[in-house]
Length: 147
Image (cartoon, rainbow, N blue to C red):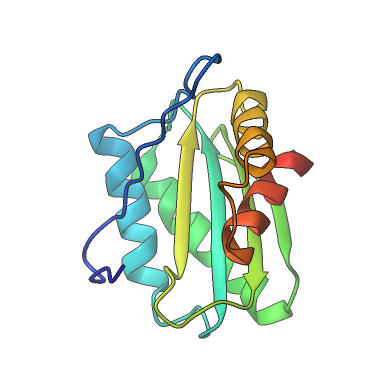
């Protein structure tokens, strides 16, 4: 699958026997993720992917994305792999993943309602069913498992 830089990939999942996760796909959410992807595209080295989770509702999205952009650049410059912070009342977690193809998205953003534990449950169920086969997706699932 090839994705142009100006497109935000969305994946639709079907869940059997459990409630579906309440991830956000509103205008504010998509705008925040797109701004981060655009501004950080050249800062993230090849072979790395930045995964970020933000708890909705997003407060002061433009200011939050500006501050978060700076924090992610600091994270990349120092070589650390993880950040957990609150910016303008928004709970944010960032993880830098190593490895992967050049075509992989440089930044993946998840905006979720406060019950993140559901997202962890789904990633675990997908891993158990063998649906998370690529190492990159497995690392994303592991990211959710930790929080």
